[in-house]
Image (tube, rainbow, N blue to C red):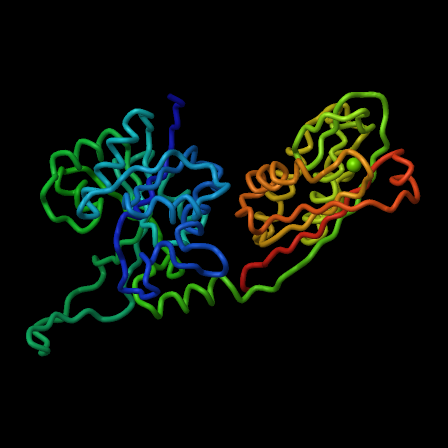
Length: 385
Ligand code: MG
């Protein structure tokens, strides 16, 4: 069992049909991806989160597999009758990993930003639990039958959000003891057991999708930003050898490709396309061929770095299209493996990854089989301004 010190537990076992759409809301699409995928990606992308586990309804397994396709997640855990049961079952499943910290997140809360999550983690250095929360700006009234009975002092009141973070052994024990009590969030479970739970700054944007209108708000929030495009081109010549690397897949061949790294022209073109879309120079600037560090390097690390830079620049990869230009090797038999590999490297569903091949009808250097070429186009969407 691999040790993960900080694990995110995403709770997505609810039936949640109030938001409309005919399927549980966590699987409804926003901007081409299920809501749950957006939620999970926040954690798979977070540098301080080691692993992500999702609690699902057993009936939703197919929806779930589609939603997280290509993302690095632990096996899902079947949930229980109520949210509190689902969290407890998720914690029991994580006990085998013995994490230090667990961040418990609602599957329908896709906008928890990296800094907010880091604030929760930081607060766990000195508290058993920590939650993001918002101070109240409206005056708070108490009413009975529609008539005000009191005006409450709002200075000590907060609106609780998620992810709620806890030191793992404490919250697992608390959930075990609170089984059967109907508590509305995990902080309430911790409070019930006398654990100290700190409040850190939440954010207005960290909304939970509940009502049909929330989908429109979320859509506007996730969308709205400009689309940007980048293109890349790369060539490598053949030399003596017995295999080539193309789009992250090793293919037996009569020659190998000549280059400082593994000479994967497909990944190089794609890396340049992503760098181009965010105006971050080219692959040679980031990974100089003169640097011995990159000798024989596997080019997937170049691509992963470009994706990371795009993420830092506030851009989200939407689609890629790669064209390989060569007479040999035949690309067709390997196309599916290439799509699968790129899908994993890019964190995109396979339907958003295209790999095509063509020849130059015997003309030019690719026609003479002296080398091959690759070109790529990447589409990214910027965060709303
Ligand atoms: Mg190259």
